[in-house]
Structure formats: structure tokens, C-alpha cells
Amino acid sequence: MQISRASQATSGFFYGWILVAVLLLLVSIGMGTTMYMYSLVAGAVGQEFGASRLALMAGSTGMLLVMGLLSPSVGSLLDRTSSRGLLIVSSLVMGAGFLWVAMSSHVWMVIASYILFISIGAAALSLLTAATLLTRWFVRYRGLAIGIAALGTQFGGFFYPPIFAATMESHDWRVAIGGMGVLIMIAGPLLTVLFVVDRPALKGLRPLGESADPAAQTATGESAPATPKLGWGQLLGDRNFWLIVFIAGAGMATNTSLLANLSLFAVDLGEPVVRGAFLVSLVAFIGVFASPFLGWLCDAINLKLVVAIMTLCQGAACLLFMSAETYTVLLLAAAFMGVGGGGVFPIFASMVAQIYDTRVYGQVLGASTLANSMLAANAPLLAGWLYDTTGSYRILLLGLAVFLLLMTACIPLLRVPRDPAERLGSPLPTM
Image (cartoon, rainbow, N blue to C red; front, side, top):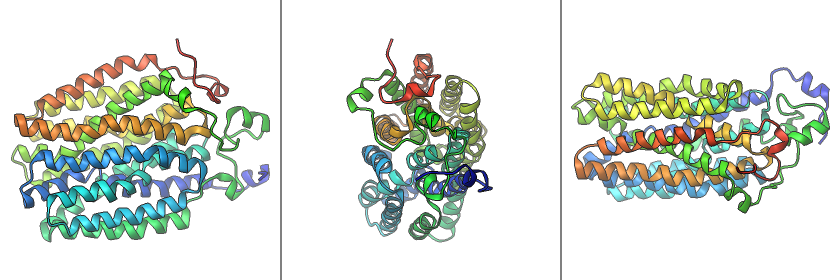
């Protein structure tokens, strides 16, 4: 389909920004109700069924493993087919999973629901989908657009946990999580049908900031057909790919392990569950500002410097949580976690976008998500085992801090091409 200059110039407000807002809401459903709420659900389930921390963390680990395993398939589907059917079906499956949790009579039913149902929805209603779609819609402001959409994680984390905690105290945790399931089954399909559009060409537009020169479009790959040109052997042999995997994996492992236990940190100090929920909301609130700001910085300054900001803030959060003996220190640790954790996915998505061509973006992002999810998924389970064994999270938090420091030292090894044409087809040459 040929796109005229007139249609782009006279279209007024760029529709891509509407898509950003809608994807923010969809991500809030997929990520906010899982990553940020899991510690609250785990606390309620553990209290009712008398489950160990290890058993409770099995649900989070299993969910993350399945999400990681599904990521390459989701990425490939997004490269080749419409996202609308995927988002609708995933919303219905995820909502049904929360309803099953509400009706569970044993802790293993809760764990099975997170692994078999909720994980499917979270894999599609995710930043993987948002980043893949927005990479097609934006050339200019791409990092900012992805960073705003990534706010869905923090948006969900800010609003859902306090509502869940209040409903749990006034009624029951089953009522709270069952209501969440119904909301997802209605809101997800409705937002998708009304607003999600896969490519700018379907609305007679070009990506924002794309050159009108056909030769330039071909060179950058922004308007070329979505035909993958990067072989799996080439991808897996690329040093950049594995650096992205381990750097993003360190960030995600820190996020998942801390979020899965965050409210429990407060409970272990003798604080009520509402104050534990406030820690979750504080992380999300700070992330609301950190996510788009760090995404914008990826566009505006050196990408490697922004990656270092992320890893160092997360490392500081781990050390503060490890030494916390008062609720005030927990608040300070949550603040650092909000800055570093809020930037994980926008920075991860920007690394892939600045190193690989957009035609293989879903493939690369899906494959790297699978790999770093294997690192991240085991962190909550390890946290639960260490707590049951030692009665403390200190060893885990120290290990995460050291891992983040090592990844910070590896950041200079990333090779980011200056010429967009270097992103085409083959990975960058290794030293």
C-alpha cells in the first residue's frame, strides 16, 4: 500500500500515541496483576493453606518459565500475523485463570492456575507485544513510546495492590482476585477490538519520523516487508545477543524476586499487610516516572550509560533491602527499586531496537526474553528456598547485588551500530 505525504501530513494527531495509551492499559492488565500483585496473593494463600515460602514461590517461578517459553512463539506470531486475535484469546484465558485461583481449595490449584492459564495471558498482554507494535509505529521517539507503554506495569502495580488489599480486608481475597478475573475478561478484548492496529499502513500512515524517501526507508528497514532475515545460528552466535540476555536477565531476576516477596519484607518486620502493599505501590509510583524518562534517555544519550544507571540502582536496592531493620529503610530501598526496575524493559527493548533491524524485532525480542526469563524465573523459587532454609533473604540479596555489579562491568562490551544499515540481516561482527 502506497502512503501519500498528504495523508501523513494532514492526519493531525498521530494515531500511534493512541496506541501507546491503549497498550499501556493492556500491559497494566498483563503485568500489573501478576508481577506486582503476586506477593499479596501469596501472603493470603499462604495464610489460608499454611504453605511454605518455597511452595508459594513455585507459582511465580512456573509462571515466569512458561512466559519465557512462550515468548519466541509470541514474537514470531507478532512478526507474521495480526495481534488482535492473540490479545483477545489471551485476555479470556488469563481472566479464567484468576477465577480458578478464586475457587481453589488447595495451594497447588493456585500454583497450577498461574502456570497453565495466567502465564499465557501475561506472555501476550506484555511489553513484548507493546514493544513489537510500537517499533513499527515509531522511528522518532521510539524509546519514549515504549517507555510510556511500559508504564502499564507500574500503573497496574500502583492501582491494583491497594484495591486488592482493601477488598481482601473488607471482604475476602477470593472476592478480590475473582473480580480481577472478570475485569480482565471484559477490558482486554474490548480495548483490543476498539483500538489496536498492527501497522501504520492499515490507517494510511507511515511510522512517525520515517523518511519519505523510499531509498532511505529500505536502508533503515522501517517500511520493508516483515520478512525475517536473521538466521537462528547467526543470532545465537552473536555476542550482543548474549550480553543483552545476561544484562536484561539480571534486571529481570532482581525485579521478579523482589516483587514476589516485597510485601513479605514488611510483614517480616511486623508491619501490617497494608504497609506491605504500600511498598509495592511506591515502587510502581516511582517507576511511572522512571520508565518513560529512562526510555527517553535511551533516545537522547548514550545507551550504555542508561543501562548502567538501571543496574546500579537495582544493586543499591538489593543492598538496602538486605540491611533493612526499619520500615524507613524499606521505603528507601523501594525508591531505588522503582528507578532501576522501572527502566528494565524500556532499556531492554531499546537495546534490541538499536542493534537489530525492525523486520526481525519480534524474533530477537522473543528469543532474548526466553533466555533471560530462564534466569529471572528461578529467582523467586531460590528466594523462597533460601528463606525457608536460613530464615532470611540476605544471601539472595547479596548474590543479586554481585550479579548486577558484574553485568555493569560487561556493559562496555555492547556494540551499538551508528549506521542503521548495519542492523540489516546479519549480526554485528565480533572482536
